[in-house]
Amino acid sequence: MAQTKYIFVTGGVASSLGKGIISASLAKLLQATGYSVTIQKLDPYINIDPGTLNPYEHGECYVTEDGAETDLDLGHYERFLNTETSQANNVTTGIIYQSVINKERRGDYLGKTVQVVPHITDEIKYRIKLLGKSKKYDFVITEIGGTVGDIESLPYIEAVRQLRWEMGRDCLVIHLTLVPYLAATGELKTKPTQHSVKTLLEYGVQPDILVCRTEKHINQTLRNKIALFCNVESNAVVESIDTETIYNVPILMLEQKLDKVVLKKLNMPDDREPDLTRWREFLQKLKNPKKEIKIGLIGKYAELKDAYKSIIESFIHAGTTNECKVKISFVQAENITEENTKEKLSDLSGILVAPGFGERGIEGKISAIKYARLNKIPFLGICLGMQCAVIEFARNVLGYKDAHSTEINPSTDHPVIDIMEDQKKIVSKGGTMRLGAYQCTLSPDSKIFSIYNKSEISERHRHRYEFNNKYLEEFINAGMIPTGINQEGDLVEIIELKDHPWFIGVQFHPEYKSTVAHPHPLFINFIKAAMEMNG
Ligand code: GLN
Image (cartoon, rainbow, N blue to C red):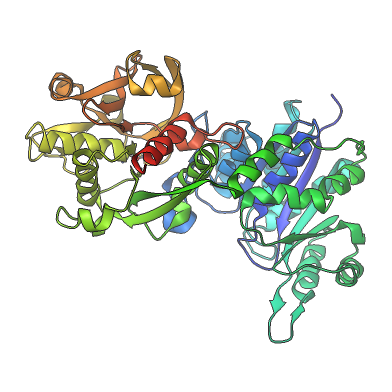
């Protein structure tokens, strides 16, 4: 295979301009042209990973097959490309420093003073080149978190400067900026972009391509102006206009010829057209739903959509498969009580109780589940959502009024959800849960079997607590059936209710594996059940 090419994506002017989506869209175009691509995210914070970060700070924590707790952008990469990422695809300043400090303690630096340049930058460069070393990829796209000019991002930008020098034409830099529209004068403004590029230049990095986020079209005169002030060719000034769905962005980038400009600059053949037939079919269906339903997402952070990113995207994929627009009604679990369930939940065609940690909102989730169980509303419980379904059943069907998870009530007499034996001795919080892909065997006569249509599945996990097998017989006898088991650990992974049209709880996270190319069967079937319920 030819030399791997490296593409760096930096951001300027403001955060949240969509570097992750631009990176994923470019990767999609290159992949659809026949190239192998992977995307990496470098995060300039000192946490080792976002696993210990509050979703208020950082949105959802995405989990990879190999059990890495990563930035939510990796979810976009997987959803766009339908290929797996791994621990190597998300590197933080914490990881970089930890590794350099460990080397220093081992004496690897042989008496040298350990410094940001070259030791930290060498470690960053090593992590970037690691993905290329596997020789699996034609392109490695590295997205650098943060905004150019931040103190935290400096070592990363410096590493990019050094790599450009070393790699020459085998790498390029794409800088994403904002071109704001001033309504008062009716003008798009290029000055913030000019300044942002100047900042990059101060650090010794000349971007090759500018992607300009904008709410109005950028005309040729403006492109020429940006090109002139920022030393880029005017065909390398790419407009990224606001659009109604992120899944449009690859098409917009295709129209802007971002892929062609990249290939040309990297001396790669640019005569093939990307095959986006399936992507366009998906978009066509997404934009022309035949039905609409409302699903309740009951979570701790109703006001915080990023905390449930993968679930929301899974609904978009599954709704599209069913040609149905899924409207998500975010319900804050804390606000639900036994008394107000009807008022809060009666207009929903399906109820999903979200994953989560800690006590807040638990009782509201349990009340919502009781409502779904008694009123035969399609219910999907994910991780904590499944655990709450088990607690609800224990309390209201088995009659154990104090039943609980020992995460919330360690002294309950009926710990129907309990900590795993090998987790009891763990004190450190980071990266110590049951994480990543595990096998699960499905019962042949179950609903879940008919959904997956196979008996062996693998799904990703992120939790410490488990169904307590001490109660298994009682649950089965009363009608809550374990229909998926991890045989290695004898762990209940899935529960179903016998007397209910669609009631499934899963200890794993199906949402991490739903992609545009492969919407997740569990979500597809849940939406189907909700549509049927709706008539
Ligand atoms: N807090 C629960 C546990 O650790 C559930 C975690 C989750 O929903 N991801 O087991």
